Image (tube, rainbow, N blue to C red; front, top):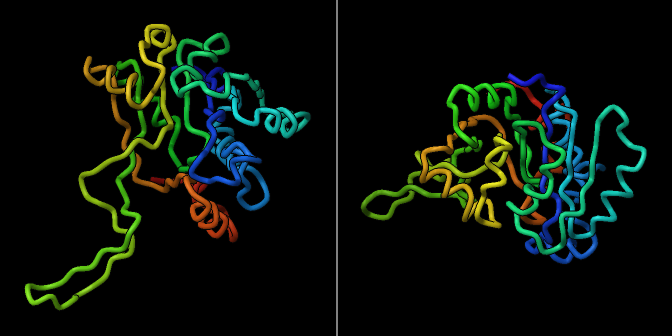
Length: 239
């Protein structure tokens, strides 16, 4: 297993974040604040706390904000910011970072936080021998559900339940560098990952702990509340 200090972390920071418009006119989504600091920094702390401190930020939209913010900050981390293009797709952004990668590397989205055990994720990846591993979390409904009998009498409500046996892509990937140059698609989700899966080379690490993405302004407000008291759940240990 590669030593923790040798593993790079690619973070996708270049999208336009259209679902949080008009804020995305002024901020790349990973720079949206959560409790006074960008969500990106919270994400980097997840990795750094577990010994992974070499970051490559794949920038694009409003890239100047990343260059300005990280200038002189966090000297204990190794941070490289690359302009991967405003219009580049997810796989192309990762491909543009390959000159900075070792034989395998972490990658993730810049807008999702989770208390993923990264060393366990890496161990899982190495043990299964695939070309890529994606972390998956159970699908949680964005709506509350209600249960009722045959007469329509409501028995109970469940607020945003976990939908059993349905899993979603939470990011927190491990990739083998040698394969990246062979990716045929510009898009990670619709092209690269399905193609790897069709070859039996994509594995899933199941995470049962905390995870949340910031897709909307409401999500940002919920993250603010989660981080207001004590240690935020994305830094808490345990599954």
